[in-house]
Image (cartoon, protein in one colour):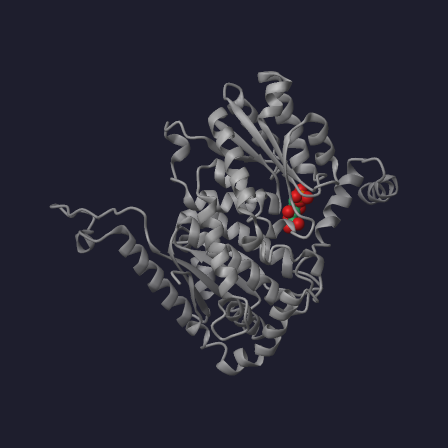
Length: 446
Ligand code: PA5
């Protein structure tokens, strides 16, 4: 299969084949728990066969809705946070022209809101949208999350003022639970087009559902190819074997964790993968960071961050390992020109492609980090195309489930996320939080 690949040989200065083999049974057990549905959090396993069971009719419907939004809107704002935001953002950034929003090519732009509570961010977005034909995709599984609810209230009111309530309703699509939550009720009352997030698909595992697929399709990308890549990865990672790359990744990172490597840095050498790192951090951070355990997921964009974080990675505390995402082929070719005066001294690389230089930066850094005591895993991606991103997404999701079970946590809940919400609601005196309001006020008034 034309596919992403993993190479773990550069971890062997820190761990051994025996360390890897000692986790083989735990990996087999984790994989079996996923497929048999008998592990912790087993009511959230809907993502496991999501690629293969998503009907063509749903994909076609998503494409039709996307096409209507593209015809009617210059800008579509995707409103959501966490798993209702990061997957779409990661894929769109990976596939987009880096300067698309500055080019007047009449293509619909997808912007994001509801992923923060920045007042200036919302003000500036609203003023940008004032003279734009815009639409909204509002995404919230629970339908009650505060950040997207605030953004939606503001942008819904703006859209209704700009085009009237009836036209606004045609340009709003809601993606939420089938029955529960304020967003579902609102969408029903206002008559919005809706898509359902299945009960058994958790937020951070939902990018291959309408949550990610609709914004990605609105941005103009091929969701069929994305799903095809995911199906390929689903099919090739069903059985316990030394060739199952999801098990290889899950086992290796746990062996490194057991050897004292508490931080994993996802490294890219392509600025288009910045948000892939953000998506990955949520996936692994929320899935594994519990019961006072779990690898801390971090990310860097190289070579940019070699000039900021490089020193720490090379020479700081030896508690880290790296997983490098290496993109084999670029979409475009740029050759470094020769210069007669050679005042910048760069003629020694004249005639080389920029990517050749980048690959040497990548290789040189990997060797330096390995020599400096930073074990390296290498994931190669043939190109930044929909199919390979689909493979990569499913690869990381499945490895995350196996890894969480090896770590002996429930990879599919996120109890810690509720604590900040409780305090925020108490401080804002939300009805129903009277006791908490009293308690927190007495603390801050001390
Ligand atoms: O992974 C998760 O479950 C979370 O990150 C959610 O996606 C996030 O909190 C947003 O929740 P909701 O979609 O219910 O608004």
